[in-house]
Length: 169
Image (cartoon, rainbow, N blue to C red; front, side, top):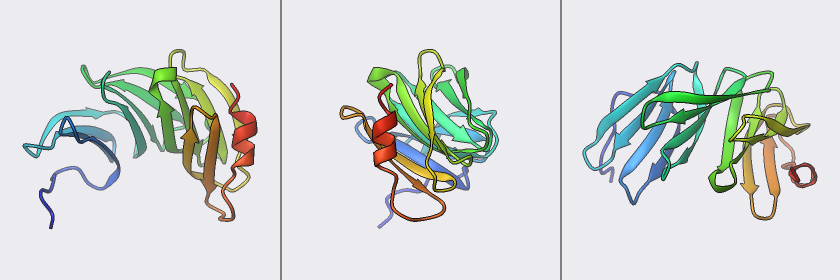
């Protein structure tokens, strides 16, 4: 049975939760919303990015990384609602993101068919490679082992070997 519904933020394209702290962050339309799960209420709304597609969250530091139809990731400070950095380099929408907050690294995939590795402290793209599978729909990383798997819109097997070779930065 459904325990609770969070209303007013539709259509949600991505959500991340910190179950221990009873908070969640959702991405829909052009806004991110930080939710109090115990009360079912929105604590903060952050806007300014067209058609959000993906989000990753650093709960201890209250930082969020979002991708959208714009060709850039945005790093948000949820404490004040401000964008602190833009990570530019994709040629189309950013469809997926994964982050290693402790190492200040992120990996994104986009409509342009590229997978990009980022330095979150500087916003620099450390390396990029073509997934060769159309738009990159998902990327999952094993950060300690420096491996990645990406999936594309053209189907076929996930691109594992390419990510391992290039995630050395």
